Length: 483
Image (cartoon, rainbow, N blue to C red; front, top):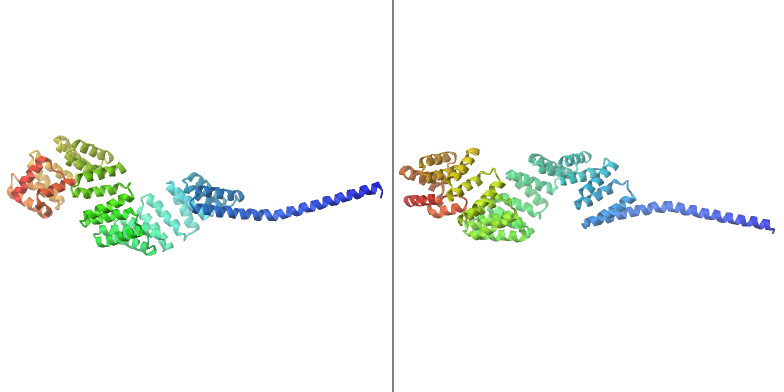
């Protein structure tokens, strides 16, 4: 073979090798075209599944990471942005959640989930108009989606529109009669507006659908207690405690029932249990203090009221009640400091001014006392406690005639006011013995406990009634004369 033929043969061989290599490359390329999309789809599904698992385990940071990897593989898939938004929102990262939901809606303007979850985020950040718009859009896309109506109810709740809130829950129930939360929330609204029969029905339906819904028993029990059906109230509250022994509100409300049943020791035990579970609720200390007050356990009541105020420095009722105890302990400066705090917190509350007038009277500042009484009556002419307090002050200032006239006006407005009848008896004592005895008898009829004499008066002072030392001296004489 000549060198030329050898050279040609070598060139042909090399060409064949190159062709084979090209064919192999083409085959591999074709194979990759089939393998890569399948691998990408599997990875996408994997990261979505992992994200859901992380979210379910409340590992929201990992969920965001998993969903982000899925988005990198398929950035055009709107549903993954919705999933990631939930992980962001669960961490309070509402701006990031909104960005994802906006992107989801941009990719798919007819995606109900996008509007629904964006509505929930808007509700969380108190942008109620935007929340309402998105949730309404969901009802247009999915007319039978009960949850959309339920959350519309929550928007109305946040805006204090009770009737619209009830209407929204009603639609949710019509769409899904097993919607436990809708029944329960509607019951709460109805109870708040004292539509008790309807509220009981809704809580009963809640319990039928979810027999272990402890708070439904608590709220139904509270209504029964309000209706003076203590036996049924106790049944419900005991059931709530059996379901959830750590539910402090069940003990708190059962304590109130015990108190209504005149079982103060049992009430104190339950208030104490409630405090052991939840020590931050100022109402529990406040109510236990009131039981201690009735038992004349002043130091324990004082400690509870101080704890109540510590839990909520704006709790005006606790501040006033602590002031009452300070007054009973002759700590007038401390009492005055507390009542001034209460007035600063609630400058339009007439009760605080009336009580401060009592303190001024106690400390010999009759002019300031009169000023507070007159200020209240100018703003609230029909506020009877101010009229009664002012009339007692008039007796102390030896203006018995004007005091009697004031007490008579109170009795015209409220014929059940034993305190006004007692004051009228005192005002008439030195000028008209017959009228005084008649008024005293009326007071006894209205409040039979007055037959215990000054003991009852002392108890009333612990409840916030006030009589100065000069008035107490005259009342002792009145009781001695008539009993």
